[in-house]
Every structure is written in structure tokens, then in C-alpha cells.
Length: 120
Image (cartoon, rainbow, N blue to C red; front, side, top):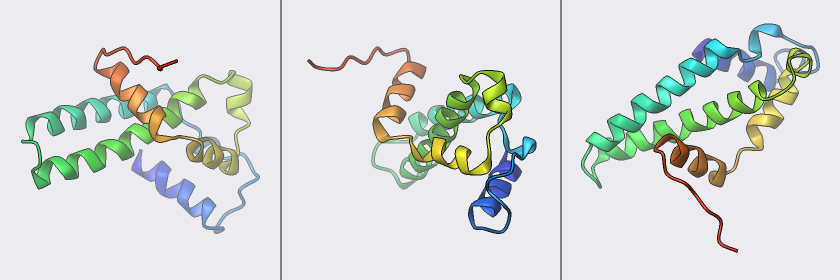
């Protein structure tokens, strides 16, 4: 998974063209399972740390990053397979950039089995 992230970063830095489809950068079900496992692992690790500890802060930072990756992969996987196959590095970056803190909170809450309601 890290190699995919590094490859996408190379495209975004202008080292590679961003308008050409690069199939190995497009997330798959395997990437989704890996990202979900990483989020669960980091969530459990953060919960084990005492509140206010530096270790917990580091784990939470890692969890936020992993949650962003998970949400981005889920958004890609929700697409029609034909749309997904045509994703360029630039479009993948737009999908990742569209993730907001509320998206992360909602997804984490759903992982913990909480229901989040929006106040009217």
C-alpha cells in the first residue's frame, strides 16, 4: 500500500503525467481490506494508550491518515467498475482532496458502531 502512495505522490509532484490512466494506482478490494485492517489496528492501539499521552497522540495522528486513505479507497470502490478503470492520478488526487474532517468522524463512528445524527 505504501508503494502505491509513493507512486501517486510521484505523479502529483509532476514527475509523471497525471492525465494518463495508471492501473496500478487504482485501489482494489485488496487495498480496501488492508486499509480497513490498518484503521482497526490503529484504533485499538490508540484506545489502549492513556488519554493525553504522547503515544496516544501519535497513534491518533496515524489513525487520521489511515482513515483518510480508507475513505478515499471506499469512494473509489463505490464507483462503477468502468469509471474506476478510467481514473487518472489527477482524479485520484481530487477524490483524496475532497475528504473532510466530518467524513473521517462519521466513518470512525460507523466503525465503532455508533450512529451519528445531524442536528436539524
